Length: 110
Length: 112
Image (cartoon, rainbow over all chains, first blue to last red; front, side, top):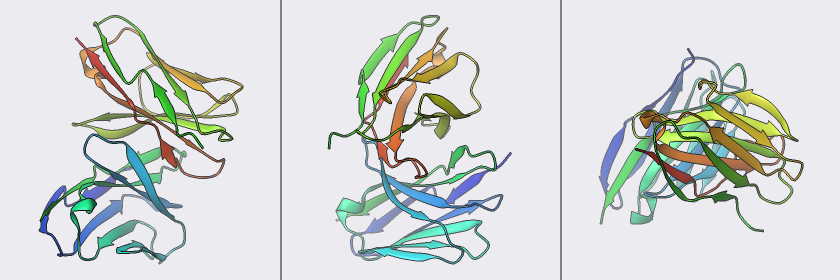
């Protein structure tokens, strides 16, 4: 079946270092969403990307949607301890069901 | 605006019992979706409702069901509970045509 894979599963960085998580779909996506979930919390919607090759920025976060609309990335510049959490990508299947990646858990050492 | 409200927050049930979880979306949002989150399987889509109609259903057995009321509040029901149903159940609301945007705090279900 359709799959959305995320790598890496875990990432430990020193505060101030950059961080990137990658999301790859087995099929073309009409759009992709990114969410952040803090430990013990619920997912928080970050952004939706719709266009091929789209790049969007939110302060230190940069989101990209691949040209083929099968992959996406989230890059955080100069991580802070407040960036700790699990980052999920999600995209609709060809039947409209939302499929989530397994998430990348980010730990930031102060 | 009040956020998405899920009740109860925590629940402990015995195998074989049934459970009903409730979700009140953000005022004005008519789209409600439900998800199961477990350490092993991650976030999995259960259902999506819009204006009292189920628009989509995930790959879960028929023991999982849901409904949406005219005020957009939604419930999901799990019958004949199994140990593997222990999970965090999340609902999200959104404006029509938008991805799930606002999640509730979730209901932590433990089946013993």
